Image (spheres, one colour):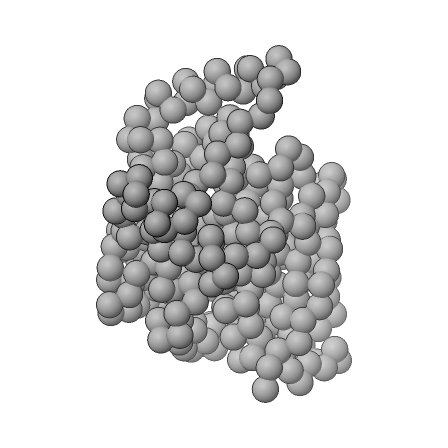
Length: 312
């Protein structure tokens, strides 16, 4: 049995643009029944058609859930201008807007909504769960705290210098200069190695996003440089010791890389106030193995299905 899909567009009152999403529905879906639902949140630089959708949303729909995966504001097929902005606060608000849409669907049980996210999406959905009590349980798949990553590797471990340069660039753009757009990855694994890059996460991200393995039209790995300042001042895990009380599942691989999912997973597992929290460390597995490789994703999906089955 396979899931059914339905393309949707939605927004909340006062929002100036639509979010574009795909509803993944169980194969035997009956609109007269009531289903638990899950919001699936894509990684940084990704889109609804990649891992959060074609791997995790699909599998959870096959397990009987209604799953909504959507493009972030300013990205993919969703609205918002300028394009190619990665704003953590907006990403979390997008999750709330997705829940707004789910609770209007007559076949969704509003008391049984969970969240799952991959990479940066894992950090975003954890953060959303701390402040939106409509989320009853949360799963992070190789989740990354994008604020921490932005302050460290993504700013050359000099966030103040990065903020100065971002401020100068934004001023230049406000005065009419062209927008600076940076690609977060090299054009190919070969090019990355030739440039001296050795980090497993950078090279495997390139293999996923820059080849037929994961490349899609909506999955852009580029960002507007001047708008990255907001991420430097943001923290996915702020006050988790008090606010993260919902059941939590953290899935990470045991082969750490520069994006820091291993350390972030261990950190949030330790800090969360959740009485029911679980940590799965998948052996011989890297960050990007958990995007689409059969055996690591099989283990992650099995754990997520059992976890949501217990809590939704």
